[in-house]
Length: 300
Image 1 (cartoon, rainbow, N blue to C red):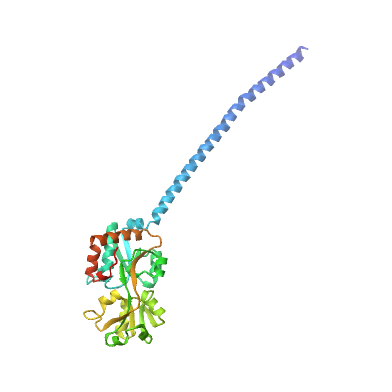
Image 2 (cartoon, rainbow, N blue to C red):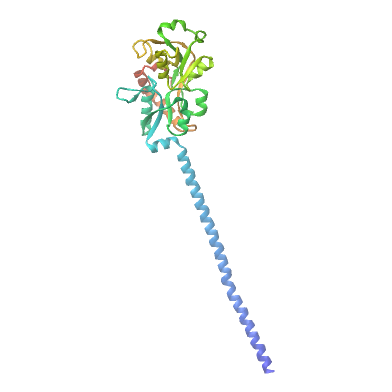
């Protein structure tokens, strides 16, 4: 009987100890689980904050990248796409680019704290040059056609212009209206407003690299006539010019010049502000007078 009692007491003690052991060990497990959950929540919060910060930084960087103004100021140059086009863009005896457009481009670049760099482009590829960032703008007596304004971010118009017929002076009296032009062969700059005009009239023409080349075609007799900008014609043909034996007759249209930037570029708005200030302080007109284009200026 004593053995049975002893055995019963022993078993009771074992069960009691087991229960105590179970109770003691469960508390740390619950604490550990709670701590792990808190740590996970903290980690998730930290990761979320880090992700939000990174997204904000990326957005800011992209906004900076999208700014043409910031891009130009960062690299320190405004690269201007041009052709040889007196009196807008041409070289002096020292090889420096001068002209109404060239001088205004230099002044605009200076206002941005950068240098103006001029690159001669194929006029027919001007949009591709812009999109490829070979140049930052097209500033070369560019007519604001539908094609140009749909593909570029353009400034306000700053000069009036027209496309005019160039012929040898000794036959000019024969070509005084559009009906008289049908038998002539023309030289025109590829991608220009002049090309668009002769094409619309159904005239025969050859596309050349620049308006200067079109003039040379007529002077050499390889083309009967050319179509160029009236501002260029006033500066380059007739008495006292390099093409004294040529003259201009028929005006084909009326148009306006503007400067083109990449689509969406904030440089266009910056240039509009610069134009307004330059017109107000008289510096724009003074520059125009230097090159004889003051009558063509448009109020800003």
